[in-house]
Image (cartoon, rainbow, N blue to C red; front, top):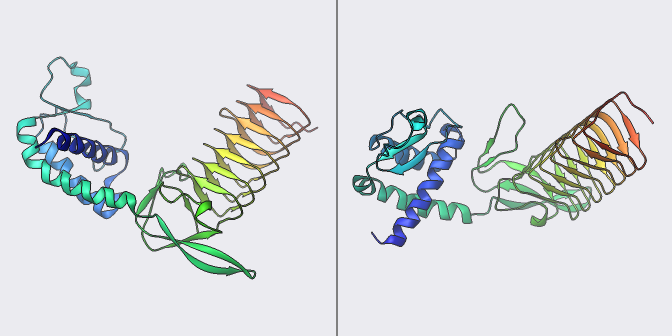
Length: 291
């Protein structure tokens, strides 16, 4: 085998291992699951693991797969390694990895969804339809991910510009993303309305309305209304009304509160408050405050 071919297969092996340890394998797309099971079983059968690696039911275990046995590894750390005999290893796994490589590259190049025309109040909109199986990562805390299977309908958009095609973002059937709004970087939109110039990245929205020039990044918003040039980053909103140039970031938590007019919030917990008017709050816990 050429060295470049080995490098290619090593890369695909890394992808197999990452998929196999990040998710319960029964929740992965069917073809992913078949290849990963075969390859990981082959690794385990030909390894010198100190501890059996139950990748099918043990998400979160992060082994380091390395060739040959390394005696210098501390006994307390050996459970985090899978050791294998490189000489015999490639002969048994090469064909599986080559087939997986062909499949996975085709899978990545396949658009995540297709569009079908839909009339809404006399206007032309598009319904998204899942075009392949894929995982949505940002699901509510009770579930870390959700498998979207090929075929089901999703929400309404104006065009592909509203929803990234080649990541793991999704807009559910009860949601809309219109105007110049953009959803990307593994975001999940559930029963929510997004419009105008909104940008949503790596976030989860449930039962929320977002419009005008809003940015929501690495955040979770539930039952909230956000509009008028506000920015939410790395924070959580629950039953909040945020508008008029408000900035909330750095692990802030806002619950049952109204915040407006140039308020700046950094690493705060705010419950049942009404805040407004050119104020800055940092590292605060506020409750039952109304201005």
